[in-house]
Structure formats: structure tokens, C-alpha cells
Length: 188
Image 1 (cartoon, helix red, strand yellow):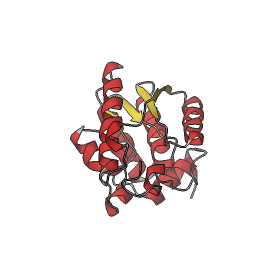
Image 2 (tube, rainbow, N blue to C red; image 1 turned 90 degrees about the vertical axis):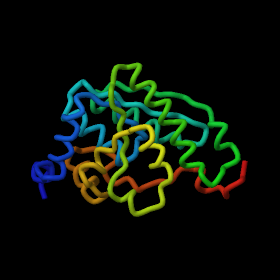
Image 3 (spheres, one colour; image 1 turned 45 degrees about the vertical axis):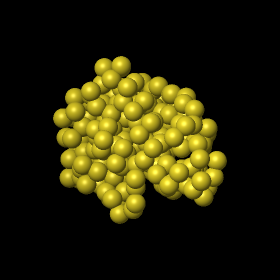
Image 4 (cartoon, rainbow, N blue to C red; image 1 turned 120 degrees about the horizontal axis):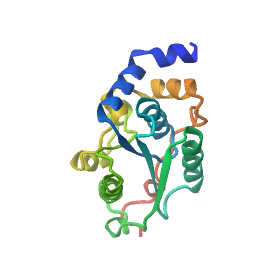
């Protein structure tokens, strides 16, 4: 399939239409595949009415932050990097750490998005995230964070195909879990 054919698919066009409907958007950009495609699509749909926001915490992989910086430079999207300490709520790695962490981090991202004049904050959640236990998605709903990839009913195969068609360097990047998931609950 050619790049043009991939980008002409209904799924990608549905994503662009959803994004246009937001008028402007701040995208939580981790440097991973999903948020990278979302950011690139937002740039196509909204031009300069897009802001990339990346959170840096002590438990994040540093190469992903570099990838987020490189992507935003490639796309010509304004980028803010927020350095945050580990939220106190997750210091002892409780069972609901994903919910608590997302709640704290995305509340901060939403605050910055609002301060910057963006009515919407979006993340890269997609159809595949519905198949797994994802307690962090509850925090996203509570904070009214938009998930355009999910709203456009896109799964990982489509996301990879569209990212490849857009020449995003992360199109074949494997998924990576948060470092905290590698520690048993209750480990400080």
C-alpha cells in the first residue's frame, strides 16, 4: 500500500475530521508511537493550533523524551517539557498507581494547556487499550482528556500504517510499559 493510499483511508480521514472539530489541541506527547501519530495528525488538521506537552519524571525513560523533542522539531510543533517530581500518591507503588499517576500528571498537563489557551488536551489512547486493564483511563475520563485515536476507532495496526506513511521515525517502535509496572506493588 502506498503512503497516499494509507492516508486516504477512512480511519485516518476520520481522525483528521475529529481533530479539526477541536479547533485547537494540546497533545500529551511521550515520544511513543501513538502520541507521535496523534501529534502529526493534529499538525496536519490544525496547522499551528497545536501544542505538544511532554512530562519528565524520575521514572521515565530519557530516550523517549529525546524522541519527543526530535519529533516536535521535525513537525514544527511548539513543545513544552514539564519536569515533575514523583507524585507523593504513588511513592509506595500502590495497586492503583496508574490511576493516581495519570490523575496527577494529566491534571498538570491540562492546567498548562488551559494556561496556553488550548481548550482541549488529548492523549494517544486507542482501541487496543480497551482490551487491557488500564486504570489510568479512568483519570483521563474524569479530567475530560480527549483520546482522538480511540474516538476514531483506530487500533495499533492502523496507527503503525499511518505513522509509516507520514515517515514518522517511531512507526515500528515497540510498545514500552512504564518503569513502575516492573516493581511489585508496595515497593517504595
